[in-house]
Length: 214
Picture 1 (spheres, rainbow, N blue to C red):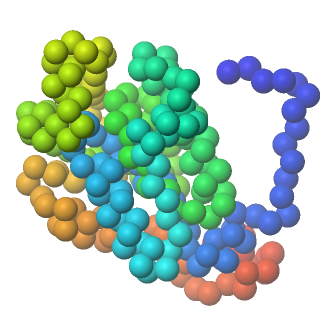
Picture 2: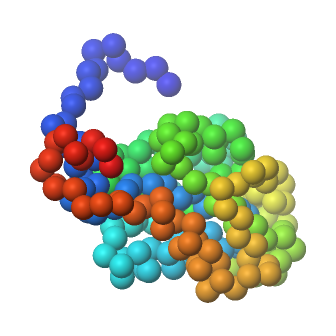
Picture 3: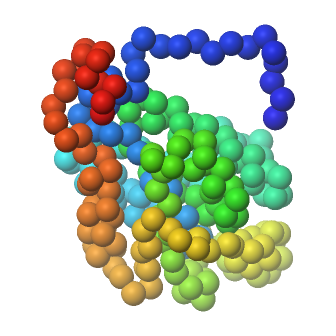
């Protein structure tokens, strides 16, 4: 998307590394992808609760919630879906710059749009979490009633019904919610996330030199 040539970036003296030192954590984006009903938001919110109880600042970004505000002007065409994820990626980038652990739960059916977010925030700060569940099981759950509407033709282009979902070929973490319950998935999530969000040693909040080493 083109932008004005008259826009200039304004740097901040307080850096991401300094904010991470203040929060005693590393900012990281955990991107939960999978079919509707697979359990993405459930797991993201469960992880947020545990991290909060541990004294960490984490925030859940949910597909439906974002479409109530930031992306309320977008539909579900391939172009609008790509723009939806682009905006979310930019928002996640701001959260990471603030030192926050991001838990993003979005169907994000295209491998290319997921890679766009990875490239945007940086591969070292991005983890693709594939919440896998067979379509038939997701339809049985049909938590929001959308599969029934999609089968009836009331929701065009619905992922898994009339629009494809591209499974991650090599996700950073695979959670199979057909065979694993929430607690088992949460245990795997915590084991995976711990080394990515932990700071190895205490660094003074105002130390401009040492904070760059985080």
